[in-house]
Length: 224
Ligand SMILES: [Fe+2]
Image (cartoon, rainbow, N blue to C red; front, side, top):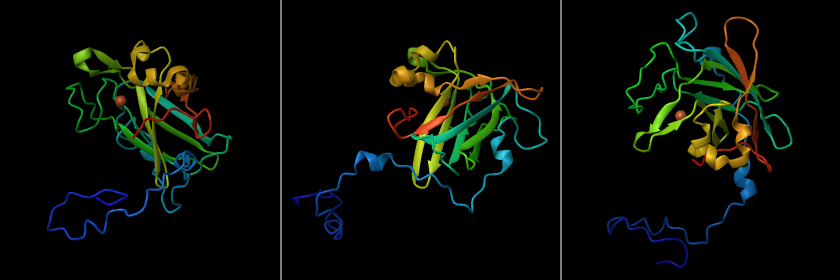
């Protein structure tokens, strides 16, 4: 056993394992550095506009079942400065509570017209927008009858950093018993999309979900 680091139990035939074991104390990264967020996606990358419309597979294709809604928001740091060109990836269950994902074994109805995943970049003022179908709630833990309320998953990425959170809907009867909502405590309101009206017939309504990265009152993010 070396003084610092660890001895790898790889086997007698691996002659390099000792050399690759740290010889010096590990440097702990300060919290401030871990919380830092590199805000830029490369300027060579752009998401397609159609990737922000989860209500259909592609422009001109039939619309998925359920209520189409628009989600907008702004991503800032703790001082209100915009996080520009952050890559936002979103996904939510379809109207029936089922994900477009190979590991959703719920057996609930798949909607062949629902894209189910989307991505977009924030603009120069930190704003993003996308369109989806109001998600259904789903029974996540059948053995204890634990439902997940309606929610939309968000991944926010810049450089090598990735943060994961969820937007909730006010007045969902399953909100109060949701495990993640319980973890949020009094900060739960910050993760509720604020409803607003949209003129025109295309969308049921809009929700504003602003996200704050860093500082004393950041948006709740899940541990990866
Ligand atoms: Fe979910």
